Image (tube, rainbow, N blue to C red; front, side, top):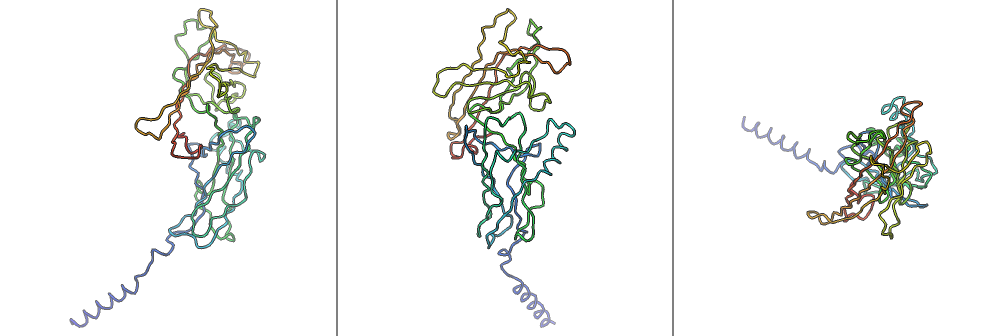
Length: 340
């Protein structure tokens, strides 16, 4: 009996040794091509690019190849536009409110290759997209470049079937030194008839959008980018040249229907000049972190002529918008350096 037991144990050991191999050297998963494009709550990827007047700005979109091993052969990943997914995204996000839809970026504002090569022995590559920014690209529209990885078995790879890996909805947001989201807790909006100025309207934040390298625009009063009539209520703010010591802001509106004018207080004084303050300091705990502080003090009045048909509501606005921009000086690329 003992002989048979030993024989059985010997066979088990032999089978175990025979089954042992370098299985970790084999691919454990499917090798699939994906974009690295993290999405926000609206299903788009915020894409920050520095505004350069008359210039071309390059954005590098990572393309990844999943798996537990490196690919042994070079792979050419095909990329194409994806307007169908953008249409579905708009419908799901905004329903019938087409004025709020994301708009596909026209082809004249960008150039990109139709494919990207992932070399043998590598698991990633960069898709280079050259954005051509110009003054006629109105940031009141929500520009998106919708991309997808082409899935075709004849191409030698498989596209990741997951929506946010196979597709990239790039929400283009140019930036300059003054654009961004400002805290608006001290930004006060009154009815013109409110002589006591006791109960102002307020908003939590205001976003400043790029017009050119030293000009931004905000929306008048409480309006923001999700108002249907937002394009009628743009307030432009121009900062002085970089070599100027002036702290005065030039503030105006192109729409004459707004009757844009200077702020007049309850005592009838109109000697208010919009201005700004800007300075920077290094973080005490993180010496590589540069903190830039910008405060805009704004004073203006305007008419709201669309909320109540046939009537004009006069508003006066005064107060400050403040923003802190953090820069990681260890990162060389500016669009990656800013901690948005």
